[in-house]
Image (cartoon, rainbow, N blue to C red; front, side, top):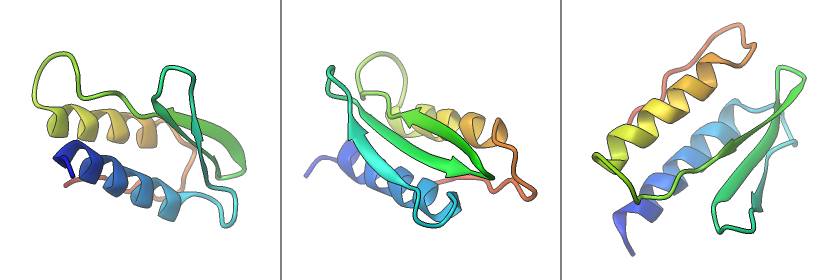
Length: 83
């Protein structure tokens, strides 16, 4: 299994843990990217997992994208994601 799959699995578990209970699900877009959909603080939001393709180390880019997404949520305590 490639490491990008392991990174995506960690992101999926993290976002599932911080979502409102029972609202988290994974949807697949036509282009093949996973879309992680849930309610966070009562607001429905989705995060599209970027592919490992273009530019820079995937792990760092994915971590930055997840933290930017989490900081945009209306949560009392904003957790930080790291690998």
